[in-house]
Length: 410
Image (cartoon, rainbow, N blue to C red):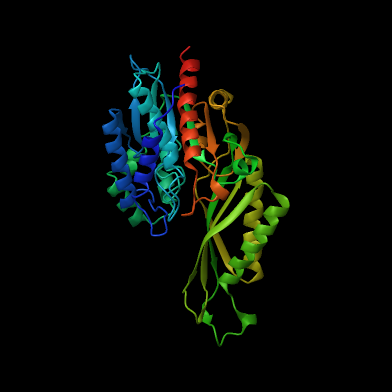
């Protein structure tokens, strides 16, 4: 049975991890920062070395292409992303790009000309440093000019990052495609379900939707020593009350849905001043659009209640929504057949993390699969997936692509 080059795959993964490496073994390659640009250049050079065709679109999405002969109008895409969260791990994203890249190299090495053009892609800003799933949203036509007014970074930072990559807002909006026949993605699980079950492969049958809000509580600055506590309008009290109440409310009413406040800052930000303003980054996730709507209504009402309790004002601004997505039975079956052929155990499960696959599912049959994460750790320098699981995932990807070629070219 055809297998990938194990040493070459692991060498690439380890080599890429040196770009943006942090002192504690993690990786920081936030989208379109200089570290990310260096990683992109590394990938471009690797594609050239492999003798595959290289392409980059207006959104900065990079591709390695193995053309059919004759070239087909439609093509099968697979991949993930090379950007990371700040001080994250080396597997989240890059493994998904490199296993497809290795699969295409393996086919080329063995003289295989696919019946349908195959393309591996590195999507821009999957992690949402600028806006969530930016590159894949550009590809499917979900990106609009107004979205650039709701980014997670300031205007100056945005313009600098676009300049780093020689991109513009206009080019970002030009990246829509209509040539995608199917999409598949490999990712580390970022949880412990596979490890706990002793299972090799998790075939994702649906991906949860995500919604996020910029939240600002406003109170009144005061001397922290002389202002009686009964008279304070402490913005942090309102924010803290919301965080704790939201936690309990979502657990009681929306499980398995989740919510998070992952960023918080207070102004003026001094030991001896009562906080006058507090910013919070609110995010919540669920597999159902209807439940997301209900969660949004309830969480925004809770924000208003917490502000009122401490005599504060509160405002909130939504970022672009990420919608839940069901996976394609055709692509899931191709993954499962590949796993069976390789004698790997597998099962179906829900993904609570967002991925480019949920965007791609809006334009083509799509699915993704997981390989185990040790102790379920992710977005952390300690993130780790055993070499054997990386290699298993690469071989499943190789044979999934071959299965899709056989099924879709028939």
